[in-house]
Amino acid sequence: MPTSRRTLLKTSAAAAAVVSLDWTRARAESETVRIGVVYDLTGPFAAGGSVASSIGTQIAIDLVNEKGGIGGKHKIAAVTADCQSKPDVAINEVERLINQEKVDIINGVYASSHAVPLAAKVEQHKKILWITTAVATAVFKDKNLQYVFRAQIHSDQYGQAFAGFLSEHAKGKLGMEPKDVKIAIIHEDGPYGVGVAAADEAYSKEAGLQVVLKEGYSAAAPDLSVLVTKLKRAKPDVISHAGYNPDITLFLRQARESGLKFKMLFGAGAGYSQLDKLRTTFAADIDNFCNIDPVPAQLLDPAKLAPGIGDLTKIMLERYKAKTGATDVPPHCSMGFNQTWVLLNNVLPVAKDKYGSFDPEAIRKAALDVDIPPGGTIQGYGVKFYPPGTPMSGQNERSTPVVMQNAGEHISVVWPTNIRTQDPVFPLPKSSIYAV
Image 1 (spheres, one colour):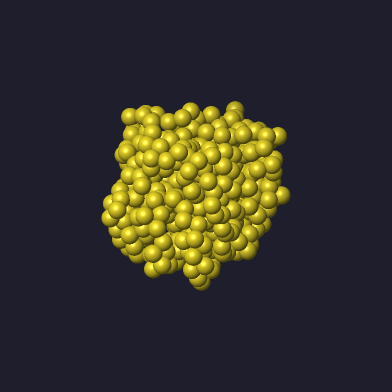
Image 2: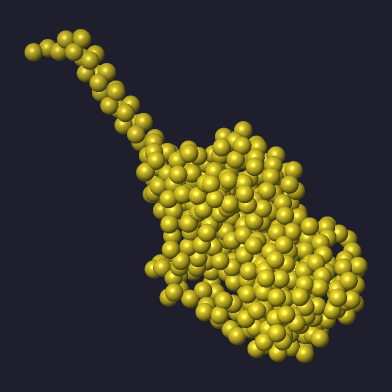
């Protein structure tokens, strides 16, 4: 029987609807997730760890895309921005990413001086800020942030590790009671340095250590000789220094020239985690200095981590070395990779599958669902974010730093004792140019 024109039109319309539905479904399944990636690729912060963090972030994105994208379906498109080591540029670039590029997720941020204003700005827009590297506790403390998350450690934990190490080793290594150990705390005067210094002071006093000097300075200061003179007068046994790359170089050069002596110097990440750059300038002068930071993933024992984590670390290291030609991989690579990996593998798939989209509200809910036990990330710690209504809402409550020591051209973990890879050399040996 011949088909009527009306029937043919109905059939064609139905077929078109099915094709349209299939096409819509296919587009949804292959949706590209655009993520703003912000780091300092130029300026003084670039060499202090920001570029290393950005490379770690890109390696994580590449690995996920090579497996089909988020959930094996959704490719990631990174929309990059260079903050140029300037807070005003960072704010303008993030505004551009949100308003012009229409991204809902900002990932990265190296400097705490950028993270503090950016957190408020992105929260105002109700977009997601996923901080990989900046550590200032002030980013989250009593802010009740809803859309800002950080799996990274925070600056209060530097003070806990600093005082914890000294309390544990003062008697056995220095032959001194903790109350007799004299501490000097010096720091750049941005949110990072101020946060670390405040924590150092609070936890040192709590442990009964003597704080004989606490002094801030501008990271752009052209001369730190007055600070060095104050240190010589105070005669501390131990110095804690929170600084970036140029100011650390200036301080160590002027300290050496003036004959400053001490039993140990503790860095607080940032420029002190760029061991290759410090060694290029100071060679063996920096041997046995300590540094507090999240651990470089390659220093952990894979057998103590979740299955597959060791293999993931190996791939990250191989790719970083291939991209940079480096022999040692700095901690900042692990920071950029680890935090980005959690976002791409533990948050975004849940946002889509459980909450139905990649919009900020779905991502926020998915982030609060994350529950990674200790040993479940390449940096050893677990991930569980403090919920809204708590003093550190959005901060990872399971993050932990370590104390590392420069062991020749490499790094060893010396604290906490249960995961150390070397017994600490403390005080500095007599061969050190800074030794008392």
